[in-house]
Image (cartoon, rainbow, N blue to C red):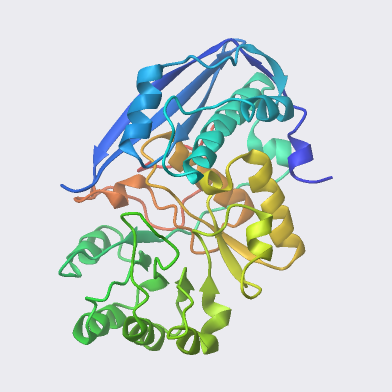
Length: 353
């Protein structure tokens, strides 16, 4: 039996839903908006979080309100089928992948509600025990780059490990300081993003500096070009992928077989796609780690919960949300996170969000 089949026939009664806007300023340039979906039914509530990045998409969704025809009795499987017959965007979105993010938000809320109505939890339904979750903190170092953001977080959690986004402005002295810290688990080259705020040029000189300086770090999302491929060829065992992965077909289309992958539930676009991808990776000897999308609400805990069940010991980019703030609070926990599933449903109660 597949992992999806363990959940697919869970009954789900939806009597209505509502939307809750969330907002946090991560910097003067980046104000993050998300939407929490609250599904109600049978005296219970299930929650999920829409992490669509476009502010216009979030505001249109929130302004439209709870106007989708979801009041009905389903199973998780029939709900997913019904949801995909609907247009979840009141206005057309410019990025097709955002439709996947919203599918995940509704699917995760439905999973939470169905489990609560069944008086169960995700780990009980899957027959898996939650494990302590190893995590890294994901950062950019600014322009011009500075180690101060790392040092502020290391002052709170001295054993913290990092996933960093190198940019062409990373010069030799800065890289030498990073190497001396000895806290970098992975480097995200952001070479697979186009037309977004995350774009990063495929700079061969930068790639060479990075692979030489961090011989044990994972190398995420490089851009393969005639200039970068010779640099990366000796390091293929360390190359992992994130942005291109929306499901099994994307894994099969990669230029070479991966050793590990960043699996972001929102990017997979739904519960079945996520669980089928986990099963595929397990069957093909591909390890996985989790990734976040700057969640502000329950979505962060949900990806931590999944990490505790499917890939607890890998460099999960699921640090408590407080690590993403410009001034992280002083009471943030160290890695690993102790298991913290809620007594019912698909929620996680780890400190720091």
